[in-house]
Length: 391
Image (cartoon, helix red, strand yellow):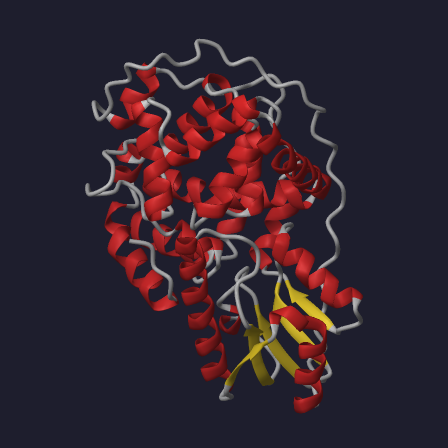
């Protein structure tokens, strides 16, 4: 269901386009569950890794359906762009979340009642049938419908009384499409700290509206969702200026899972193409396998485009491996796709801090969109026609 190569993602996009107009707008909020026909494109994991880009997806929807019919689909694609742009201007939010998560992971094994609730939640063994089904679907497939995600997060927070940071981490380790911005900020929104004071409360009526009569919903759910006490979001800060490539320098291309179609963009002659030897972090096995397949596909395409052999660099000795790679090919600069705030960006920043001449290529879509995400989405969406002009 979730393409892990560019060719499969493009094919799935074409197959979905007849339903990207009014049919999508009418049915996108309905989820009949695993084994049924899905009402969304299921392209978000491919878009997250940029096997296909937001610009490509929106351009095809626009050309086949027109803007009036495809507006809702295009807006949903742009939600991820908005979240990423918001976090690019407030990277301290990601750093604070990471610090809080580390503290909670160290503390929760020592606190038995929360530890038992947490273990039951991630195992899908709480006795709340809808929540348990979604937890198992997530672990088994790496996927959950958007409304299921919202209701799951609300039950996690307000019924099970578990920290939002642990829920965001559970999603991030399993969801194939989870990116630091969209995942973290969506959990903050449900908790009432992204839009201060505005929470999301799961209740039987909302669950039945989105999921029909799949669940009995006999177990009691929280009747209120008080916003969590939390500092307000910081004001936006200027985004770092985009790196500039020098077309006269001997250039190597280094791929990360943040952007796996770099070769589709204008580049100087590429002398060598490489990627890391393995996926970093602690993803669930299914997510790791999907990312590995996507990375292998991106590496093979980029190497074929450049007419060179693909190479893998030792992740455990990244700086030394990259310096050796540069020396073997007499490289003067390394280009890579821009990685938004998160682990991949931190990794690139560490390589740059070690003195490696890495140039992070920012797409025109991001360069235009990210600075516009200063407030809420509904102000941001007024600029979507400007973005579509780039696609």
